[in-house]
Length: 112
Image 1 (tube, rainbow, N blue to C red):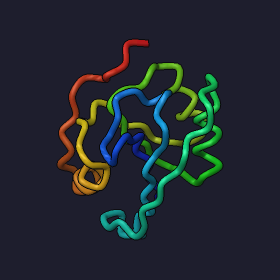
Image 2 (image 1 turned 60 degrees about the vertical axis):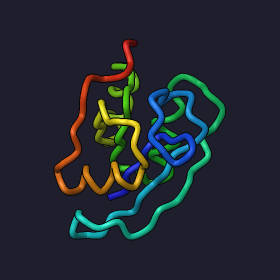
Image 3 (image 1 turned 60 degrees about the horizontal axis):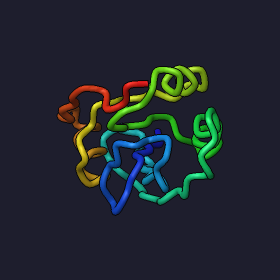
C-alpha cells in the first residue's frame, strides 16, 4: 500500500488539484506501519493528469481534504482509493490516524 497526501509545508492542503506536491507513505504488509516517507513534486496542473501520474508512482490510496467528483471517478477507475474530508494536519499524523481507523473526516472541501 502507498498513501499520498497533498501537502503544503508538511500539512495537508485543501486544494488538491493545485498542490505543489504530495507526501507519499509506503505502508508495511501489516497495513498499520509506515515504512518510508517520500515527497513527490506534482506535475504542472492539467485536468485528468494526476490520477495517471500518481498511479505511475505506485499510489494506491489518497487522503485529501477535498476533491471533485470527476477526479474521484478518475482515481477509482485506476484502482486508487480516495478518502476526502481530512483536516489540515501534518501528513504523517493523518496517515497514522488513517491506518489506525481513527481519522475523523468532515465534509468534502471541494464543490466541483
